[in-house]
Image (cartoon, rainbow, N blue to C red; front, side, top):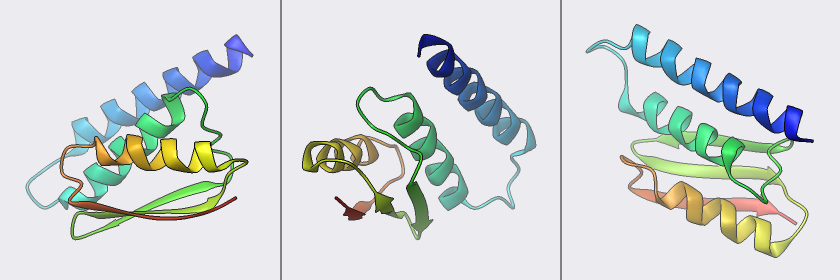
Length: 95
């Protein structure tokens, strides 16, 4: 279990570095918000991201997919609301 968690952190870090290295003025901030949201959800305890998707349009983050519990749904929304650049969060997750 710890090995899988470590792999997620390594993957999330690599994705962040890749996005940061390739960022330029033409990139949309929505892509950045989406990536940061995904990384935060992947590394958050108590949230399964295997069937969770994130989209961002004009700073509005939409969470959709399936989670196991109402608590997991609420936590995913809470995490998404902490992301810089996220103007609002639409939580369409299904339990």
